[in-house]
Image (cartoon, rainbow, N blue to C red; front, side, top):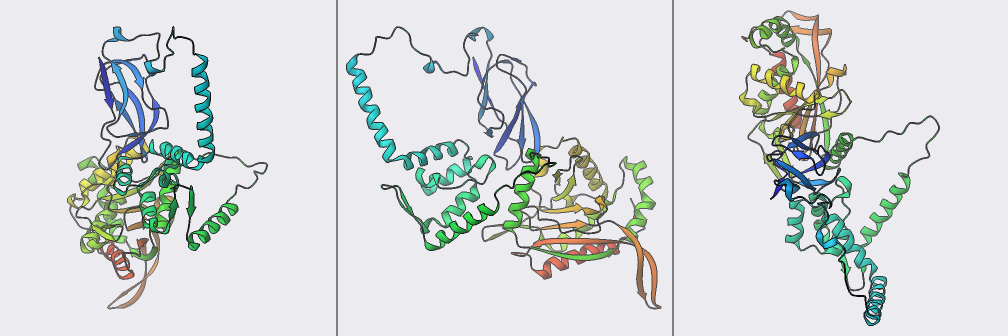
Length: 459
């Protein structure tokens, strides 16, 4: 009996995964719980295990392929005796060459040659349409269910689809590609019968601009002493994500300097007792995130995302904490419902997610659904920076290094100079929906909470 193995749900909102490596080969025995393959979703690699026992008889995808969630990626034979070892199970019986067929008659051969000549003539005169269909079929192999649904709803023809340049991995057509095409669909006039495409004058200008940019971006000759290093998969994902963010959002950055002396003094006083009581090191990260959550509750319009011309206001506060891994790549694990956690809960989440991120043990749904992100620039000794928004969020807060320096203190007795622990906060926000008042007021409120930190609070 054949058993179908389907790719399980990898996390909320994840509809596909990239096959990284097969752990078993055809003919291998598979037991329940055995790892069959490794897949990648966004920035996290996951292992897929079998729930059944049998012999692996068919592998429907190869390394690098995109596997939609719920699709059959392999077949197991529960009855090993029923497997014919002399035949590759991935080869269909229909492909086998039949034996003892009668010889082809001259009349049939003549008809075949005539048909071949007619087909050749059709292909020659209509090559562009055929190429469009071939391009469509190639792209169709990698279409997500969402994209396929849009194509069917909007009745996008094969020829139209062949003209859409995919911007996804391996040139796959994404939802954004389809949406952008539909916005300008009325400007195109396609003459399918004559295989001609007409465009507006503006499109002609854009085509010239693109051609000029392509000429500028041609690779330069590689000089002696230059090492070429191919980007790994995660670096490509990060690069695409950052470029998309800059293209989508109108970035503005505001800076505030905060006196965090009280917070520093509290941590120094409480860290040993905190570890003894809860078994967790009290770092600055959960203390800082706690103040960010308070500010989000004061300014809930910072906890939104944008979809077309709609603003999606989020009830849950899910804080992403950007982390640089030892190999230099970036990952953003998310603390879900962070506003429901106290300092101990935040500290546990920060420690757990941070440790598993360094070991590449995060689950796919642990890096999704973030509503606001903080990034600790101070861990590299940087006093401030201009972080890029983590899409589809509308803001990100950069936390600079804590530095002791002389500061002017004003009180009723006058001005004085004291040594204080200071930190710069860098707030980047999307000016499409976050204006200067909201973006600036939010980061100022975070600074106020940091400066008013209760050094005598209980733990």
